[in-house]
Length: 229
Length: 229
DNA sequence: AATTTATGATAGTATAAGTATCAATTTTAT
DNA sequence: ATAAAATTGATACTTATACTATCATAAATT
Image 1 (cartoon, each protein chain N blue to C red):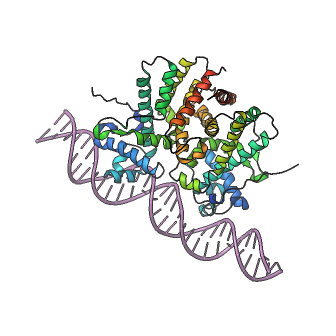
Image 2: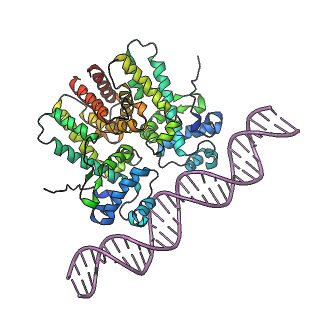
Image 3: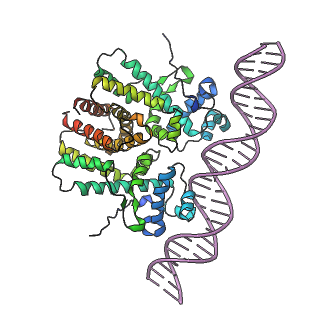
């Protein structure tokens, strides 16, 4: 059985829906690789246009500016991840097992490489790397309140709320389920970043895989949930 | 007894030592308030110069660019904080008590408002707010490896290592002391940011003080250290 | 008093960010 | 199949940012 899961994006994120044209899908796809390759600050719409063989002005017709494109990509990731959480924890009996599955999703442990159909498929590994480096810049701005009013962070909140629910399922008396959920998400990301770039801020062996990070998160999560408050 | 503690800054951070002239100290002081008021992305050296009644070119004589000034401010904070950790945990008998003191430092619980002498004193509350919003941008860049080679993040690593040592003092068998230390620092910051700006990502009452954040961190830390690995 | 050093004032370049226009092309509706 | 509508390409602007350069003046050193 073949199927694709479509993510419905917040309409404030774009001027013209990039999912509805080849050019739009290409902006998203190439945007991920450009941001991934040279980083958000070095990236410009001109460079993106050149790489795509199109014009700056064409990209501006889809996205108001670079920041909106970033938020688009990052929220796409949150929504994709929330779907994975729902899908992969479905029919698991124990909340413990669900949480374990969620942690493995957060570090993209053993994920398949792409999402979506053929040429327009999204390179999830690259997107994950982008999220690790740039996702926090989506909200660490002066206009966070305004963006929040436009519901731009709803996918992040939804993901967080969903994880918090599983936490409460496992330990109904724990009073900081949402903070713990957001901490797990953020910690998964910057510990991965530190492991790669500033390894002395971690205890992980850079030459090995992310198993140690997973161990760290697992221990953090389950010890916290076991101890009464 | 009057005394001031001087922080020796990495010389790669500036072109001319801002501590050694009135103009330089003013750049640092006003830089903190400007970044604090309008945020890093909106801030420019032109705006900073206008606000100071000086010229753009004069600021460029001290700092290569905006990012270096950011790193300067942020690392100043890390060094100041490490000193506070050393000072305030000195002569405390139990590592548990030391860790508790460290957590309170991380959220700036009951800190006095300024550091340094008179007119050149640094507004710590504003700097703390700046660190919460902007500190991660100091390392979340493409040139992190190069900056790291220039030791720009040494103060952060030193602080982290010091906290990790207290963690090991309290629980010698815990294998992730450094990751836990960096997690505590980061979590203290973005949970404070979320509390202020995206409160549904937390369980904290925005109308109250940071006590709940402290409770969250305390529980996270001590439950993790109690449980065997 | 002489000399080095720091700052102010002004000017200039390169790139980024964003807008506007219009013709050419593609898509959609009839 | 044809007309109408929407999309894209191509070009050209405007404004702002991020610097660099120069030189006169002021301040601090020797």
